[in-house]
Image (tube, rainbow, N blue to C red; front, side, top):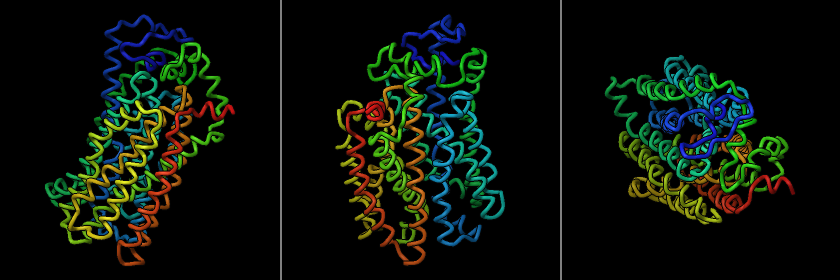
Length: 446
């Protein structure tokens, strides 16, 4: 599988230094593997947010059931970025050792187990521990999805990033929209309403099993070395000679020397702060404004579902522009307008604010697309993805927690919403910097 993971159905095969014999595969076999990867990418993306948004829809019930204060609930909404930062940095090393497909497949197993255990763990500590297990699986998959796209589809980074971003948004919005109705249909138990999403995660394990088995039979390198790293460097006009040098080039890449890498990390962190505050608290903002629980869940779903079409359009547009900064400005302006609406008329214009914040949250697929564009090689993408996401999620940890503290001690949503709006300004600025047409390899070399 080591050499198969670097091809699209139409790309020219690169001979593996391991001599696995994969070059003798028929075009139909390669096409079948490529289709299987597409299915795996889509199913994996569908599972990267339901563990979070399903909890956001039932946060009040979970708080009451576990006896949480507002500050503890804020800590609960900070757990996702903490886990993404801690576990996401491990993803490239795990992928070098076991292969990206194996790590993503194991991530889906971890999500399944965590979602099954979490509602029935008993007490806040058990709930947090099981949530961390599921979030660990999400974290490694978050980091490796751009790597898999770059490796398998080097000439279609924008469209494939759009596809899995769209699937991610669909899974996010579906969990927000149907968790409350599902809970009612299952007898009103919030435990059942949260556990039901384990079934979707279990389905996402299946496509990766034959890919991992084929990889084991190939007997090639397990990591980013040899053919895998070479294959990842096809994209964005690099030559086969550059591809052959990719492993050595990536090994010496000092990612922290790149201003673009830091700008992208901060941009990722600020958009993640906004996203997790939205997923964790927006339904509660509407409920406190007098909106019914079911309607509040639908409003959160509307915010999330905006990412379905825009997550496909934005990456394709971004790859056609020499500078992605203007997109970051438009998305930030929508966020500022949405927060202003939540502050002044949360119930009266609820649907409009949900739409505007949904557009603003599409900074996530923009960030993922820029990860693929700001590195020249596949191994460079892996390093940049791990750095930007791990650093970014570390930056995002205090946001949801601070919102919970401000909400509890101020007795309202004025200060938390002002905080959210204030963070949108630096997000726009670093988005402009990260969108410049340059690569981290070039900057690190200087």
